[in-house]
Length: 115
Image 1 (cartoon, rainbow, N blue to C red):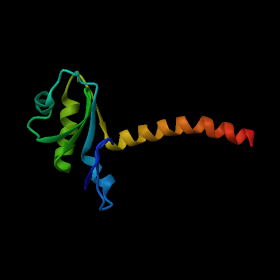
Image 2 (cartoon, one colour):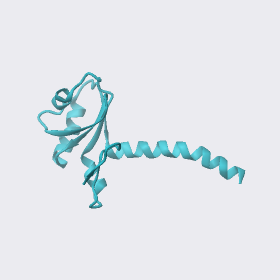
Image 3 (cartoon, rainbow, N blue to C red):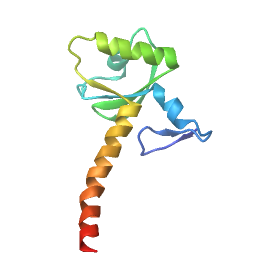
């Protein structure tokens, strides 16, 4: 694995299994900026998770294994009124792909009409 400085998530697995490994990554966003590491860890207790900060109100939550990833999703569903959003890596990638298509589609379509 290589740790990247300004990329999200901030690791790349060179063994070619990135997407499978990323199934344990969840984007936690919209939580109060006053929350510190301990506050974030308490949300997922009794699970032990890794955190990789994106900014003051979002971070990647990384489960240790597949069982913990499933438990993490169950914990989130059990929270009645969460103060944050939890997005799977798969959903995050889909949203990024949609944003990229919106940005490139109108320009690409205009160029094709002019040609």
